[in-house]
Image: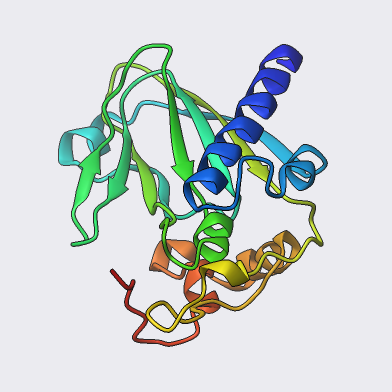
Length: 198
């Protein structure tokens, strides 16, 4: 697991470099903060549920977005779904030994909505086997404030988010029920009718 953690940490820093370069900020933007930041590895196990799988009812993990900058997920089987902009749940293709990369809330805030945090969930799709996944979340330090990058604010794209840190997110979790569709990213948007500018 240690070698996997090291490899995914290196990958996370590289992917953030690609993201920040795509934003016109250069590949080294905040890379030191990523290297010194938080990496959390979670091994998730979803036991089979014959009745729920049959009725398409079982959620192994309720809908949510990740606060992290990004999350890499190694899936042992299918079951991961993402929500499209129209609210429809779409299956993420299962490719053996491939990593899925989810953009998190921190990147949405930094990019001022250029990149959007992915709302996702896990469905129990089998009554025969246990689904296992390994998620690696990559973020800045717990108290490192994440805010909209000034260079990404313009008249056409005004600042759309408040600043926050990982600790703010951790304080949000016990006070809110994410299974009811309460997402931390919604508390950071500056207007209730926030529309992602084109």
